[in-house]
Amino acid sequence: MSATSAIEISGQLWVNREGCGYLGVGRIELLERIDEYGSITQAAKHIGMSYKTAWDAVVAMNNLADRPLMVRATGGKGGGGTYLTDYGKQVVVGYRLMEAEHRRFLARMEESMQNFDQINNLLKAISMKTSARNQFRGQVSYLEKGAVNSEVKVDLGEGLEIFAIVTNEAVVELGLALGKETIVLIKSSFVLLSPDNNLRISARNRLYGIVHEITPGAVNSEVKLELPGGRMLTAIITKEALHELGFTPGQHACALIKASHVILAVND
Image (cartoon, rainbow, N blue to C red; front, side):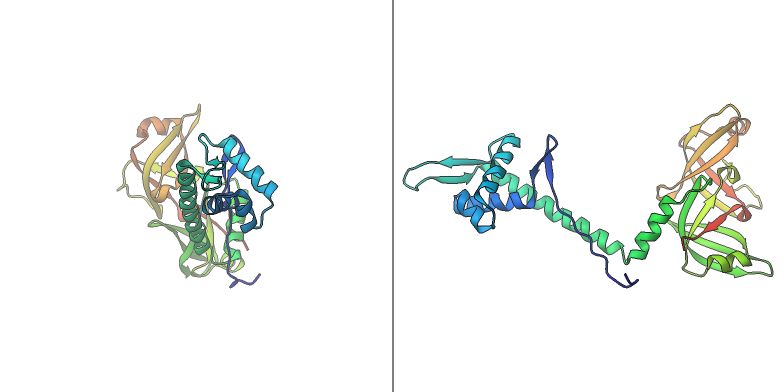
């Protein structure tokens, strides 16, 4: 598939009850035609369904419904027939509303996927195995080459950005360039935490967030910092540091990371 081929996302909406198929587009259309013709036979014929299949579907729906969906009138001036109850009509309307929302959901997914390569790269990033606890996905927004090393800035979105110092050889091997999709890896032991947002330190990266969770340990403790956009940054600090800094959930904190401790990776 070429990079410019359009991705189409499709799917059908099924409503189940008690673990059994209850309502689908075919059954809803059958109900609509029954209400229109007043006859299961005519409804089945109109949508190209055998009478037995239609009758089995009617029985299954009525058995799973908490109230009757249809009533059968026999004889009389109108000659009898099968019609939807008021509840049956409500079920049809409710399903069509859900179906419309389902189509809008699929359309939004389709718009967000420009080509198969994006999906493939996303799956690779999710399945990638690494010992680094912190993994973020972004795009190279700045690249400055030096004599030996290069400074790379990766835009993570939500106002977050990470600076990394990598060798010029790594820049070539990874194919780093402006706009290149890149995965940022940061070991949790490389993350320094401070309750002081204005602390003066040589670490190039400063990420501000709120302490989300603390897991104390006998020697080290794990601290999860919630960053803008709901991302989580994990830091491993000593038990003594946790006590001295007095971190508690809900507290604002600053994560400090040296640019040389940031690892960059790509999928291709």
